[in-house]
Length: 181
Image 1: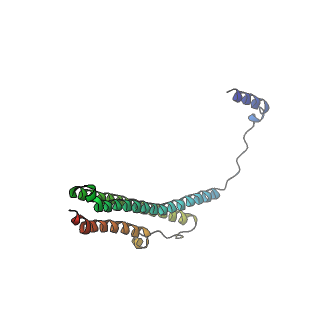
Image 2: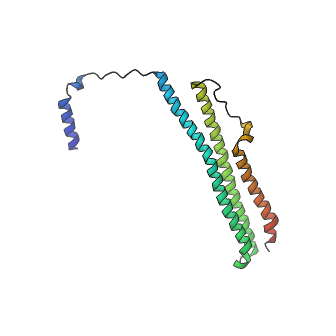
Image 3: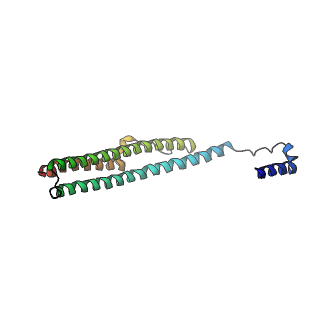
């Protein structure tokens, strides 16, 4: 508190006459330059968000693969060792179905996250196109089309997850559950 009091007194004494003057006018700023700088920063942000949504898909896939592999291994271990562990066939079937259900929930959630990522990507791409239409020239970037979904790697990731879940249920129903006796 004392430091601020001393500075206030010394600044009043030294700059007393300057405080009476009018402030210097701000330099003239070209409004176009400000808009260009703002647009450039916004464009960088949009590109960074598009990159982040692309990276997130691979993170979601890695999490699904790790969780599904671990749960499938647990199911296989349960199937192989249930007799030696003294687990009844009813509990073993329930455990296997529970593990498959958990894999299904994780896969469904992963698919949902990928689809939300696609929607976010589409939104950022539309924003990017609008920005480049205004700043560069109209039509500089073509807007993404949903009908080109077969070109997106997310489509095949969703198909892989859905197929792997369906395969695990089929395999368990055909080759594992009937042999739990």
